Length: 519
Image: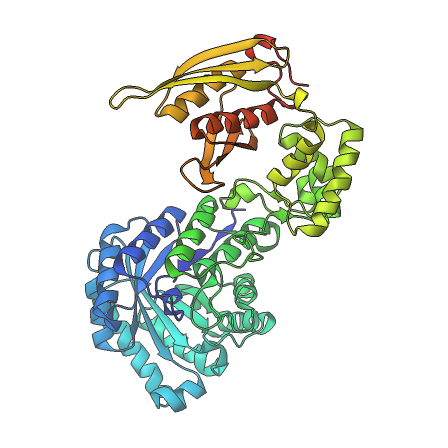
C-alpha cells in the first residue's frame, strides 16, 4: 500500500514575514522563493497582494518566475482583495487564491460584527467571485479552533459547495492542544457531508509551543495539507516549523504512513537563508536546524554513538543538509570520544600517551566550555614537541625573487633531523605562496593554506612580526607560528612549524622519498 501524500504549504513569505522585525524586500523574497522551489514545497504563499504595492509586486514577480510549486496569494473575503490577488497571480504556472474570513464568536462579535448566516453568505460570495479568476481556491475560517464546531461544519460545507478546493482549519491564536485539535478534524470529517470534495488543511500557531504537535495530530486525524514556515517564524510566537513537520513524517513513517515530496537535503540551506535575511537567528537547540541538533557531548552518549549512530541519533544529518554529526569535546566527554577525535585528526597515540592526554584534557575542559581540535592538537604537541630534536625540519635558508610583472619564485633549503640538507624551488601567486610551495615539495605534502596573519609584536620600523598560519592536510588542520624582524623569513618558519606538527605521528608517513620518517 502506497503511503498517503501530505501537501506542504509554506507561508514563510506571508505569515512568516508578519513576524515583527522580519520585513523582506522584493529581491529577498524572490531569493527565498527560489530556495523553497528547490526544496520542492507544494505551495508557496507569496504574500498578501492588497496589503501594499511592494507585496503586490513581490507576489507578481514570484508568480512569474517560480515553476514547479503552486503560488498562492492571500485575500480577505472582499472583492478588491480577491481582484488584487488574481491580478498578481496572472502569470503563475499554477495559481491559488487563499481567502479568509473570521468565524469564531469572539471575532464575529468584536471584529466583523456579523451574524452566523451573514458570515456564511460572505464566504460563499467570496468563493464564487474568486472562481471567476482561478480554479484553485482555498478558504480559511479564521480562529477556527475557537469556532463552535456545528457552525464551523456548516460554513465549511457551504464554501465547498461554492467551489473551494481546500479548506484550511487555522488555530489562529495557538489555543488548541493536540487531542482537541485532532478531534476537531475528525469531527469535520464526520459531519461535513461534502468534505471529500476538498483537501483539509491546518495552520497552527505556536503560542503554547504546540504548533507542530497540533499539526501532526491533525494529520493523523485526516488533514492532508499543513501550512508552516521555515524555522517556525511568524506572528507572535510563530507557526509550525516546516522542517520539523517534514522530518517528523520522514522519521516516523511507521506511525504516520504519510510522506511529502520535499527534498529534505535542502532544509538547512533554506533555514540559513531565511535566518540571514530576516535577522532572526536559530536557537542552538532548535530541532533539525539548530547548531546542537546533531551534536553530542555526554560521554555516555558519545560512547553509544561511536558504537552505533542510532543509539542516540534518530535522523541522518545529511538528510537535512548537515555534513555530519558533531562530537563536542567538553568536560562531559569520555576517553572513547577523545580517542576517536585524535584518530580523526590523524594522530596514533599509545595507551600511555592517551592516558596522559586524557588527564590534561580533563583539566583544560574544566577551564573551557568547549574544547576545539586546535586545543587537542596543542595538548598532543606539548607532549611530543617538548624536545625540538623531534622536529622533522628546521629552516636553512630562503631565497626569494619578486619583480612586478614576473612570476614570483622561491628557493628554500631545509635541514632534516639527520642533518641532511634538502632544497627545492617553486613558483607561486606571490613570494609567500612560492615559499610554501617549495616547502611542500620538500616535505612531500600537499597542503591548503586556510589562514595567514601577520601581527607586529613590538614598536618601530624594526618591529618583530609574528606570523600565524592555519594549514589543512587531508583531514588534519594545524596552527603554525613564526616570528622575527624579517616577515618573509618568519612566514617560512611559521609554515615549517605547521609542517612539523603534521609530520608528528601523522598519517602522512615517510616524507621526501622516505628519508625522514615521522617519529
